[in-house]
Structure formats: structure tokens, C-alpha cells
Image 1 (spheres, rainbow, N blue to C red):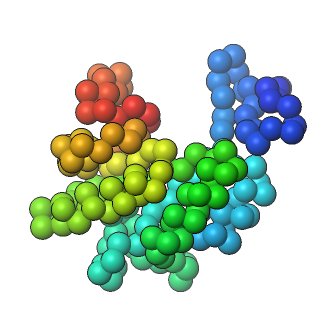
Image 2: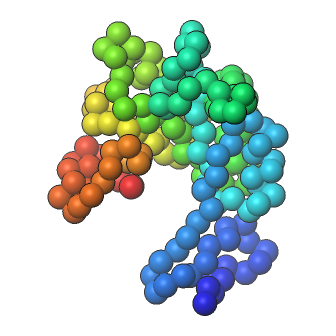
Image 3: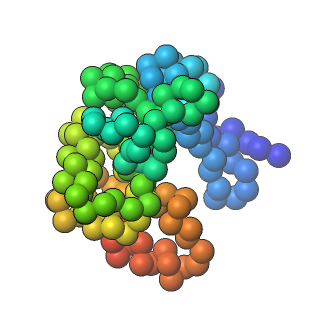
Length: 171
């Protein structure tokens, strides 16, 4: 049986499923409207990508521009900032998606600028999809914690140690 470990008045709705194990609700938010729905569901954390300027189909988070004819990303930096500020006010963590499997060399500077914009707005972590992304972010002096995206396919403890060596602190 699940046991609630926080009183109902608290925002965080984590449940103790097995001894020492916590489950948190991490949800997508691509707009302020979607964020409002997710906050009503008592989300603990959101993940969000930002549509990069000048890209017609591709993005820095490995998604196309639309999902089922709806935008797959936050559409502007102003809206991203509003979402981050709202999350901060509500005590909800913000995970920025920068998890493309590869960044063509001619787009590396644009990728760093894209990530830096989100970190300057106050995201709590950055999900990456390759060691290349981790190295670009680390070499740019960005210190926001990195999260290993599922495309990295973490399969064993040795691999997780390698991730830690690249400042990737969460899987």
C-alpha cells in the first residue's frame, strides 16, 4: 500500500511506494495554459523545451516543432520566463529539455546560447541527450545540474559513473 508522506496541505504529493522510494509527478508544460492544468494536478516538477529561433522543423530537444498539430515547445522566451517564474512561486521545479542526440558543429554556439538563456531565467536542471551536449554545456561554464535523458540509455553502474564524471547528476 502507498503511504502519503506529506500532509495534504503541502504542494509536493510524493508517495512512499517501497521503503526509501519516492515517486514524484513530473509533467510537460508547453504553455501557460498547459502549466495551469499541470499545477492543478499537483505536479512536483515540469519539463519544458523552447522553440529555437530560426528552426523550421528541428529543435535542440530532439522533437519536431509539433505534436499532433500542437506546438511541442514553449513558443517564446517571454512565455518561458513567465512559466519559470510561476513555477518558482508555486515551488515546482523546472527541468529544461536540451536533449538532442547530436548537435551539428555549425549549431553548437546556438545550442549554448539556447541553454544559457534558460539557465539565466532560473531553470533548476537541464536534460541532455548526449555526452557532446554535456561537454558543450560544461565547457561553456554553465553550472546548472545536468540530467541524463532517456536517449542516453543508462544500462549499468559503470555507465552511471561515467555520467557523474561529466557532471550529470541525475538519471
